[in-house]
Image (cartoon, rainbow, N blue to C red; front, side):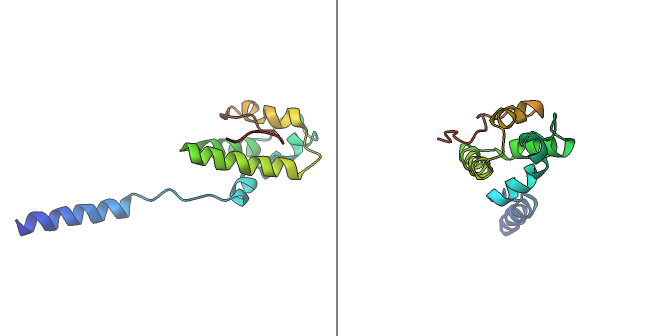
Length: 113
């Protein structure tokens, strides 16, 4: 019986080591991922760059829970509002142009609830 308990504890310890907890993100993390999108969303480029789209796809993949999605929405709204030169139409079209549609439309006035 003692051997079974030790085996169970060892297995549980291994699972704890192998399974990483999901790390939280910051608005700064998200901003870094979409920094390459600036030329497109400000009208200096006709299409988003591959680096930009890679960042958008990474953000979409990070939207695991409803709370994650809400927090990312808030971060993107803050970022969009901070830059007056951003073109609303380009910003809204960005996820679809990158092949990574989001569950909300990015805009300066989006409702994240």
